[in-house]
Image (cartoon, rainbow over all chains, first blue to last red; front, side, top):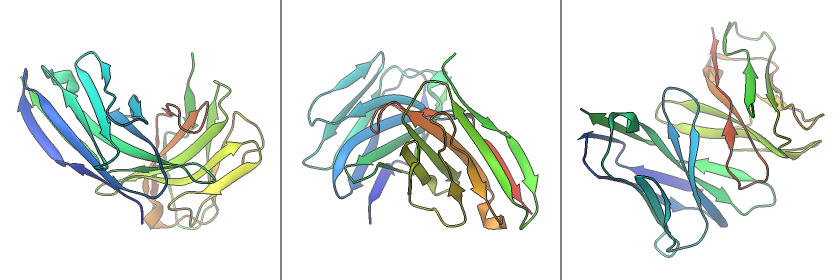
Length: 112
Length: 112
């Protein structure tokens, strides 16, 4: 059974801290790994990673994939209260169709 | 404005009363998908569609039907809703399978 596990499930930090969110996966036919941010509404896309070892970066957020060890991390530096959200990791599968399997998410709370 | 729309946004219904949640996108995307989101279970894929008249089951298809007669629309049909289908539902679309998925605003369904 395909599985995506995120840790921690919940994290509380102060503004300015740096956080690292983890996503590990056990799937057959891995194709891609995606990160989403979900505030109190629909998820919004952050990154898609397909190649191991290549960092994707957008402002204070960055992510990297390790296909050998089957995990990805999402880093957020100099956190702000606006970073408070649920961060979702999803794995896209190389199947005859197209499926995304999501992890449970990490609830990040950034306090002023 | 490029977007995915869903209707209704909120729905309270009773067991067994057939309902349809509509989803429409204006980005000419080939790929569309339905998810449900439940506390502790994360986002789970219900059905997806690679193109017109091409649909396939996701992880939790039981009790749901879909159709893709036109590229822009992908309605979710619950023929006989039950209380365990009470959930937050998201429609999503993307240009190709593993590209960034755009999510609709969500439909909160309660089945009494």
